[in-house]
Image 1 (tube, rainbow, N blue to C red):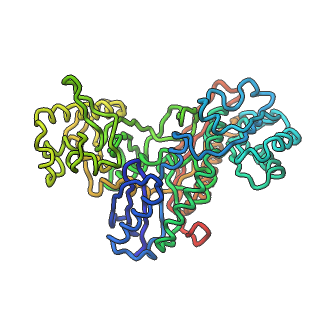
Image 2 (cartoon, one colour):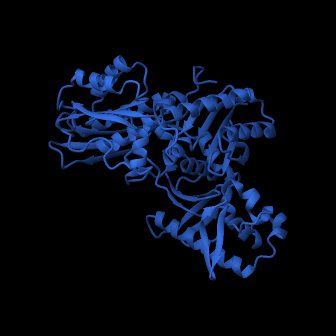
Image 3 (tube, one colour):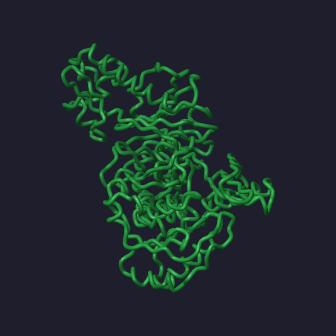
Length: 523
């Protein structure tokens, strides 16, 4: 029997799940997340292997969903110093790189930036030739100061040649410095794509630390598995791909919960409510995958435009604090987080939490009811009503019609959710709901995405879509998909009246099963 190991690191708990070769959940565990994160990962792996009695040699895949990169940007820590080269002179000189960035993160990341000659039109035609001396001089100026390089070009997703040429020149001057190219990050818009590329470059060391740490954790427990990492669209990428694009791991927690919930219930369309210790994340399951956000994604105060799930987060979780001020009940957003087993009343602490409320009402932790029996039932009912209203309002914001839809609960904090909610046809709490995020990580497929503008003066619509499908398929293979299993799950084509000629924007997503190999990704 062969197994997959899925791990998801949250702010409160680290979950692990073993999935057998029939894609059935074999065993799940939950351990507290540690401050250094890596120790928590080792604890979770050791516990799931020990309790399941599975031979570690039978684990062939190991998938990790992690908050490392998110935390690095939010906390402004462990970020590389970045030199930025934009290929776009004279067309883009009015707005330089780092425009509208928060001062604190800009100071942490920026070494210097330059706009050099070059760029393409929307259909791939040349705007201007490159100037090698411009690039070489800039590299000499930042040598010894920059730890990573970000390169972005006008319409680089349409034609990536100039970005690749500039990368070659950078290596001639600076050696094997990490380089992020914008043509593989984000979508068409230059400024947001450039921002995402700069953030990606700043995360190179953090990303490498995550990969090395995961590899060491597996090796320490004698697990020789191929490593994969969750990305923010609900799919996976192999370690080599994650090493180049660590930014894609951001926001993967809620998407893992959505994918795991889909597997546990067999539903393809539903609302998913993932309740952790600190927050509740509400997402939409559409055709088996998380619905993507159509809005610009702001990460650490920086505007980007790469794909992210459409998620609404509210400050309500299993460890959320309850306060009473002049007879007014205040629910959150403060939480005791991973210290719930020390601070909550039902565990002998002195902080009133949402878990204490539902325990007093008889919904959870019946064996600890004596710890909260001094709480007023009337008071607890009022708090529970307020908690329910918060969830109902959030669910209503995520719905696209007044029609009632099924709600799937996931996450260890789901015990605080009422079993009857307005706008919901049924509330489903599947088996293993507490580890849906780790299950989602283990079961995810591998994807490839393409967003490109085509000129229909040179080809017809069908030819353009066929080309985009090929490119998306190629991206999926690069990320680790088995070519024989790849299918196209979404195609969008949008006429662009504001561009000259007959322009068409095409977006394609391809997904496939994991391709298992015996190469260097195995630890």
